[in-house]
Image 1: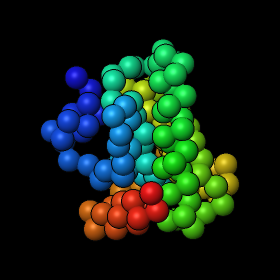
Image 2: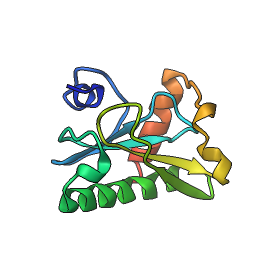
Image 3: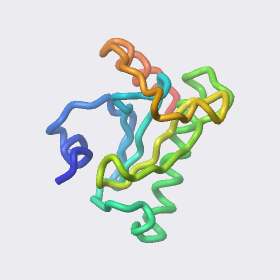
Image 4: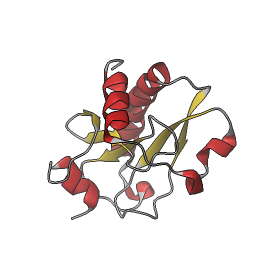
Length: 128
């Protein structure tokens, strides 16, 4: 069982943004920028391109809704979307507020306080 499955099942706390029957979105605990959100399928699949076509389509459409809410909640030029797939063996999409391509440098991840994380989660959810 992956750490993301444990988060989805409520065994590990998170700053949940949204979920439906197939997908789950929550704030990254080491964000590139406030609002950095992970979108994962509830079904454990390691590699994103192993996800069945309809499920992958649904995941991207779910991510789109979350990205629109992040953009309304966090001042930025765009919401960057990346798929790395090496750090956790559970497919996931990173959605991060950006103003330049350099804002997606994962070496610059930050640590935010619990209060900051809760505030940004609530702000994003208010736009869903």
